[in-house]
Length: 455
Image (tube, rainbow, N blue to C red; front, side):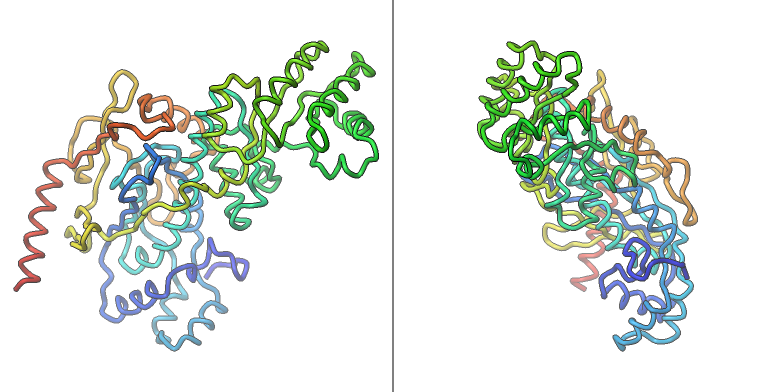
């Protein structure tokens, strides 16, 4: 058993659905312990999305390396009256011993393509289902949203600061990391900065201005304490706030070090235009304009298209909760057991059998199509799934740093065809094909299963 905080969900085997444990006991009772292959994928793109970005792999591997139970966990399971002492004893020694294949973090992915592949004894692979799904699903949503925001910003800086409205502290940290992965320059969340090595940014809120009887005095005091700061100018009257920043510049002369002003409300495009004219007329060409306040990729895109002289954007709530797309139709399904392919036939939830590989074709620096084939097929192109864990321990490909993943993510966005990078739905979706060999496996197994059911 692992020494861990009592309720650390990333290291607790109890972070699972009850039916995983009841099935695990049944597997143990029946002596069912052969190798299983489970694949994590999503079935369809959500409305308004042309691609999804895979994220969260690091936390999955962290969890699998340390996953276990405590005596308190076992005592709780006893209270459910569902598990024998023999089974609880088996859980006491639990350690994940399998292997994991995955696409690198920051890779753009499409429907039906395995993002993560878990190969392990059936009991182990079954018990980690909820954990693997949970740790990949939300980061992939936010990374995909962040990619769109960064694309819309067209080279302007993007800062993530949605922690206060994120769905819990863990979600806030993962949102900060996912946004940085996809090109945001930093986060407002200090713990995310410490944990992931992300630059942290931020200066003041309206409350600081409100504690002073005079807005100009608040600006002067803060600028003296923090040279190179950003001053928030919309507490009372935005353009009057800009004038007070200009007055401060005149008083300080060469000692003036304010780096930017921040607009957080109102017509951001019009206010930015007026503010830029005022600052330039005063010779403050180096003072940047930072905009925030309910922004997402569509608002950012509209501001850029209108020519708003905004140098950087702060994006919070709509990014941190992936407001327009709060969930993916993501699943973790058994595709092979005991060396044989497996599948289900449920309406609109059928899956392709057997362990797979995804091969990506690239032409003239752009990705053009993917082929999902058998794991052992030889197909032309780049294989996306890589081994990241073996015998429960990470491999080199599973130790990629956030900075390395960030470089890969930038490359992935650059390789996307223009119509897929667009915020509008692509007229022609990205091509994902099934190899003839995999299709033949699917058709043959389907016939076998249907015959068995009808018989």
